[in-house]
Image 1 (cartoon, rainbow, N blue to C red):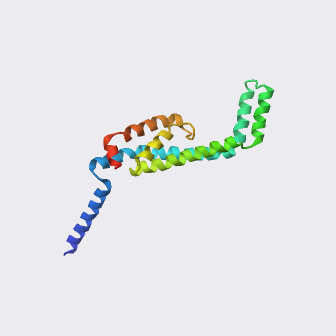
Image 2: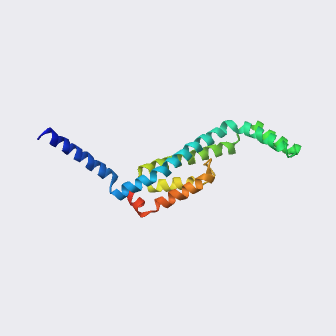
Image 3: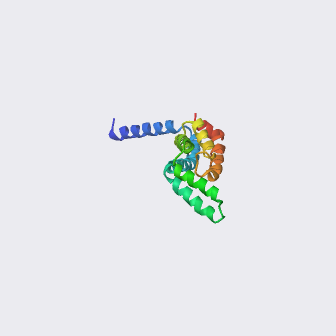
Length: 165
């Protein structure tokens, strides 16, 4: 066997392996259609993790800003005292729960987005699409609603469902 023949055979085997990994041309096209929403989901998930984690450190600053903002509206002294008390109390169990919920939600969303990009787990991809629309963990839920709807519509196309199999 000549070197040219060996090269041709190795290239053919490589192409067949690539085709096997991609599946049909329709599956490859479906996978390409999922890349942009998957990247956006990844961005939203990472931003949500950062936003949730920053809640541990920014609460006193946010409360101070709210006190200053409400002073313009003649904040009653008892309301101001209550806000200052909340600021000085530090993190409460509710605050910690919100941070844990936000980080957990966004980690699940990140895993689902990565699965969506790799066309691997339809259920996790759908879960990520639903989570991006919820206000409990996403810092951008008003932008997440159209993204979530877009992903759900894409995931329910027959050629996309077939690509996940």
